Picture (cartoon, one colour):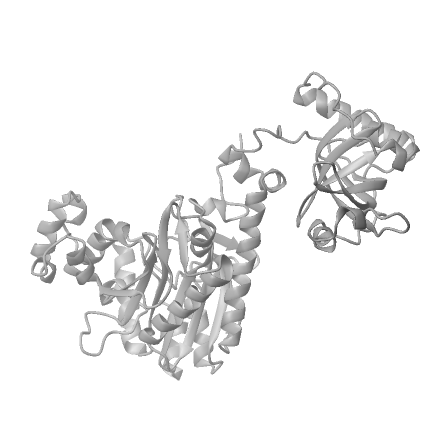
Amino acid sequence: MNEQKPAAVPPQLDENEVIQRKKEKIQALRDLGRNPYDNTFRPDTQVAAFRTACDGIPKEELEKPGKPQRFALAGRVMALRMMGKLAFGHLKDETGRLQVVFTKEYLGEGFDFFKKFVDIGDIVGVTGEAYVTKTGELSLLIYSVHLLTKNVRPLPEKFHGLTDKETRYRQRYLDLIMNDESLEVFKKRVKIVNFVRDWMNRAEFLEVETPMMHPLVSGAAARPFVTHHNTLDMQLYMRIAPECYLKRLLVGGMGKVYEINRNFRNEGISIKHNPEFTMMEFYWPYATYTDLMSFTEEMISSLAVAVTGGTKVVYQGREIEFAAPWKRLTIEESLVEHGVCTAEEAKTRDGLFAAALRHGMDKDHIGKMSYYKLLVEIFEEKVEEHLWQPTFITRYPTEVSPLARRNDAEPDYTDRFEFFIACREIGNAFSEQNDPQSQYEAFAKQVEEKKKGNAEAVDMDTDYIRALEYGMPPAGGEGVGIDRLVMLLTDAPSIRDVILFPLLRSEQ
């Protein structure tokens, strides 16, 4: 087969002209009795499987006369170069791209149909045999072509591709068509979620489902989305966390439970925050928060190996070492280690206040905070940004941990940790509060906070108190941010890069 030089490139049309010409082709096809959206072709091979089948076979063997193996593939035409009685194109399916070769010699009259009606962006079914070009590129030499979906809108110009972030997020389907790396990110996301699910199942946790519409605000400190059920005439809140429902299951004796859940928080949007996000939350009877540290280290370091091939991962140009053991610091120790205050200052509110002012924190904002709230505020403002390597932060105050178990020796603190990687919180865990009286008192304080204007305070959940009064076993519980884990393991700078359809302002 002779490979010819490409013909001159025709002048570019504007988008509206291209759309109009494609619509005219669609009508012409219908006038000929051809369905431009046919569903009669059945592929038997994907691009990756085709490459595997041909891998290592010499060109002479692949193209051996006689009865070569025929393949039927389907995908989108991503490139097309017409060269008289010869054309080269690229076919893309979910497994990859492949060069396809169309010739008058092999297609016969079908070549005229192909030349007239098939364009870049169309979805086609093709049958053919393996062929290696003079430049050594594995290709598919086409015997027949079936137009399956006629594309109307032109794809972005190949050289520049689709680079505009807003368009990529808003038209994710176009991003996935044009950017193979985006498709790989979301394939890895599937792999990460499946790994976590398999890990939990192997650890004998039961996967469950709990309500996404709650009658009360519960489970986390966050501003909720509000909705209304017309038939019951009741106000409901979109789930900010499944915690209290999952712990009801511990009361019922289900044992170890987990949920990979969608949560909704009516808060700001940033590279780390989307109002709708995914967490994996689990509860483990008779375990403590220290057990959960070891479990978390092992799970996430194993996940890093499964996704990237090792425990050392480069994220945004800096290395993260996921291998256990991870660093452990109390909040006070972290303030001292990162030079925010001295060990002596960390012991008193006045000392913390002076350190906060020294670091430029707003006097009016922190002026009325208690020692414990100020401790957490300074940590979040001045320490989190330094926690690049995986780090457990412990000894959170009871005042900011309404669902956590108080430490037996220091009741002003809880048996809780948060863990941070790449300067952001990835998960939160604690030994659970199972004393109904203590839980009631913590809820009551939250109710007072809400009356004072704290929009993130939780409600008094009397049914949950009632459940605890039947007896919940001591347990450890944890929530892990799936989106942020995917960011770390795919080198994604923004959470919008790992959520298929992130929330955006309405398109004008």
